[in-house]
Length: 487
Image (cartoon, rainbow, N blue to C red; front, side, top):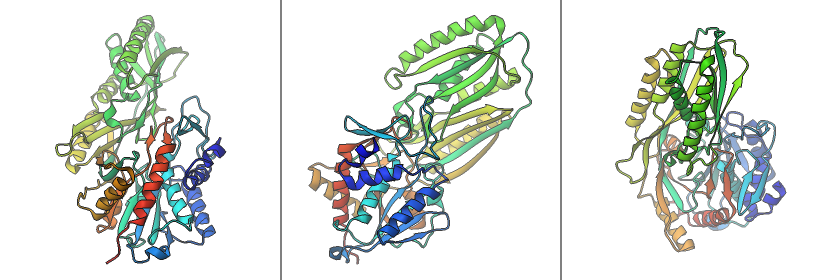
């Protein structure tokens, strides 16, 4: 199947993308993919340099017709989000991505595709290996660990780059040019409990929600997609109106930047309440399917009676946790006052795990306004600290402030309009791009972000448009050809 992808046009991108996807590239474990790119540089007689954190820069001289132009930085991140369907057996750290083409889209078999940001990396590789494409002097920056904290960009060397213009290839709509983005911060909630032994008059239920659409917790947070963690804890709240319950185990969500698609909770209830609770769950399943019909058509709630758990939270701790999670803001918190339709501040209640007496919960809070980001993260922390949980904030990164008067932006708009006869959208997005962080290291660098159309990023439904990638490649080469002269 991957050989089918290699033959797609433009082959300069798809052939390199297939090679990339043969190399495991999880966040925080990028050694294999960085070594792959170093070997690529050496095979093409290109100089390269690693900074202390592990970001790679590959250097290429200008073509003879563009030696008088400004040096540019081409930038993409090398890591990818690892998400798979629950019924798929796949080891991301050992196996390459299995791909296929369907109805004009490149897809993966039950896993994330890695088009975010692998298509950007592959496009840069296509430029670096070409002897026919006109371009100025290039510094190709491949950053690590974008998806789980942006630590590569945050710790980028302040002296490894000299370029005056940065082209980030991590935008996912081919008719958009991005000039700004939100910042973010991680919230980690934890507590260790004294557990109790279940009573003889209790039965055990395992309740599972799956089939949700999932997606990018920034770019798609405004779509009203179901969050499995929030839905299941609202179900527990309804059960608690019928009877007392104890939580035995929780496993919900995955990566902090992916809207949770699956969650399961094991609870104990009084034996004489089992039939009543099962009837309630059946009603909730039918009603929720109707409520989520347009956003999450494959939603499913399943409950089964299980044999035994040897420990559980007491009823007070269970109730307090249910209330706290239901009180925790999730989704859009505030819309922008200055840009129509832009989400200003949001939260993704990303992951909840409870096993062997310890609970761990993570959120990713985003905002284009720093005060709002800190306001919401403090509000979430207070919900949990007041019931005895430990909360910590980490991985904070700045947003990217738009520069509507950028010459690079004006030139890109002109190139797009000339090629496609209509103007592109110029957007600020509610997602994390590395531009703002890189800009904190290189404050005089002009930046824009663009890319091919990718849908369903951060979920197993991720897919990349073949036609859009062709359009993106034409646009990318045109921008390179029109980089202005250096002063």
